[in-house]
Length: 98
Image (cartoon, rainbow, N blue to C red; front, side, top):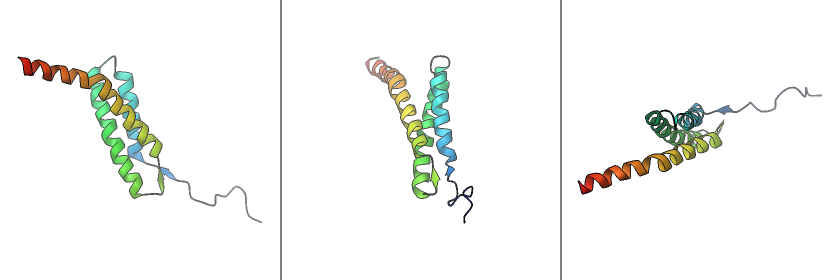
């Protein structure tokens, strides 16, 4: 008889870059109203690390964290798109008409 407390498979490990991605996205959400520049940097870091994590997870199917990397990427891209692209577009328009 087998021992029911023993695992039949090894536990899967989380991708470190996926955890970094969701952490940077969370930091960006917290800093959005307080420190906008830090929020922008954290959002860009969330997007980049989310893309790196997705590539890492495709290359290593033994790891997990696809949802974390996707959430970090989407939150970071959403924050950059909603909060900072209108500011950059207005600067470019002012520079074009100056």
